[in-house]
Structures are given as C-alpha cells and as structure tokens.
Image 1 (cartoon, one colour):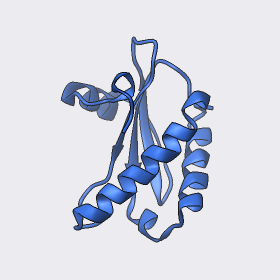
Image 2 (cartoon, one colour):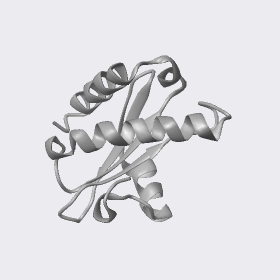
Image 3 (cartoon, helix red, strand yellow):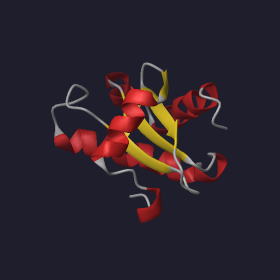
Length: 112
C-alpha cells in the first residue's frame, strides 16, 4: 500500500487523469499521467476484470506493481498524478520482467 499522501483515490482525480492526461502503453502495462498542484506525486494501480476474473489474481498483480513503484518512487518526479494500468499479458510474466517493462514505460513517458 502507498503512504496516504502518495495515494490517488478520489473519483474526480481519476476522471481528470483519464480525460486530460497523457498516456503510454505496453502490452503488459501502461500509464496515464497528469500534472497536479501538489508537492508530491500520487499513484494508483488499476487491474480490471478483463485481465482476470479472479480477484485473488488481480490483487496479486496490484501488489506486485505497487512494490515495483515503491522501489523506484524516488526516481519519479514530484507533482504528478499517475495511474498505472495493468494488461492481460502481465499474467504470464515473471516479477522481474514486470519490473523491467514498467520501467521502460516510465522512461518512454519521460518521467525519469
């Protein structure tokens, strides 16, 4: 779980990021991001039911991606709302491959 100040949780914030934010995608994961007016960045990990019908598998993916984000949080810039979207291809990947691909997407978005 992210610390309270780093959590993106309000519906209006999600809508703003989805409508106005820029996006970068890979087959396994992607992200949408938008500048915010805060001094910290806020994050959310979204795993839809199209990825897996099993809540256990979706929650596991969510936990794994949160750990990757927490490990590399100091590299990410401040002042952004970032929504990480997990795709169906992430189900077959090993943890280190998920980490590598997520970092590639972050670099592609020029957030690092």
